[in-house]
Length: 553
Image (cartoon, rainbow, N blue to C red):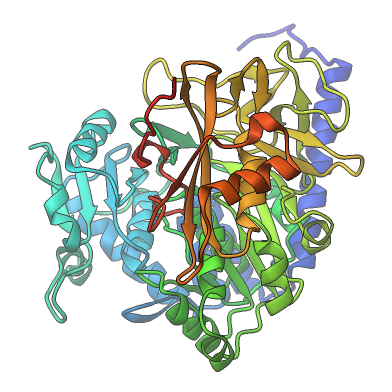
């Protein structure tokens, strides 16, 4: 025991404690406003406290708390039916014991290759009860890439839907395969068999915190594993609730893939809010509307391209379903063209646009009033978030000028799992890799990825303003603009355009429109018409799969 040693108290340390107390108090206030914190029976409060003391802030705690507070409330509604909070808690206890019987322990790496259904949710909860690590795999990965990721993460268990069996040709021998969703109706899945077994292993009382690894969803290169942090308190939820008015207990339709940061974050929000999470294995616009109407979803989580596909439905189909969302929150990619305005004109001013990434969680959130002012805005920094636009020397740029986006919040990721991969930090803020500018009201507008800006004839040219302009052109269904090599100017822009059925537009008309609205260096010298743009499951355009025009002399 040390004696005679007194803790050093500095103004900075006192200020930090005060700041943390303020953030926690404010976060709790926002949770109370959303209905998460409310009077309850003492026995239910004790049950919730017991879950927190055992598992901390985790999925295991969330469903255990739900089982204590509202045991009969629906927790998961998917293609197979409904599970209550009590059922999820009891089933994941059984699943955790069965996994332990099969050698899963604390820090064992489990990988998930699943669509949206109860399987990956229950696996993640059971893993939390054991302290195991979970890696979320993108279902569009090749067999080679899946094998690489499994080896990199040293995964001992892979839980995969049966439909992806053709992608498992390079599964490491040391990795056990568990089938999560069978191909045929009524067939017994290995995951179901584990759930049916009682399991003999005792569950740990205070397991260590398992890691959640999300693969970066970039459109080029091999995805990197990013270790997501576990919240230290309720402040992160408060940041989201400060800009998006979710309500406790309100059914939430979650359309983005759960393997994506946005989809998994929505699941965590639903858990915290005690809200039924409505999941569909595959997104189909009409089926999504039917599910929203059937389960009276007041909250909808999506990516922009999903809203575009819904608006493409015939008016008779749109009017068929009584869909009245109170909140529609999108993220994952930029809002193209006039999509925000068209969606709000049809469904009301209910649209919220969250800009973030796997690495930084959130940066800014645009509410309906922001989107009415500027349909392309990424919004304002929510409560507890620092947002700065800096130049190449990390100095602040004047309002309205383009610079690099840096952000600080309580959920910056813990780093990549691959040696050597890193992001830039400055004064506690993390670079997002994007370029953007702030207006006088603090709204952020993105100019595109920093690595997508091109220099053409000595001029800095950004593809995104060209994309936004062409997306509003009559007859254009979707568009992507990228930089390509040019012998004379160094680089030039190329536009890839998908037209609506029956629409007519030629390359000269595309160039004329851009020339009339933007600088001459923004005019795409190449205009390529495609039947569709290659996209990943979260709606981002896969630029590496776009045809490369011939280099011009």
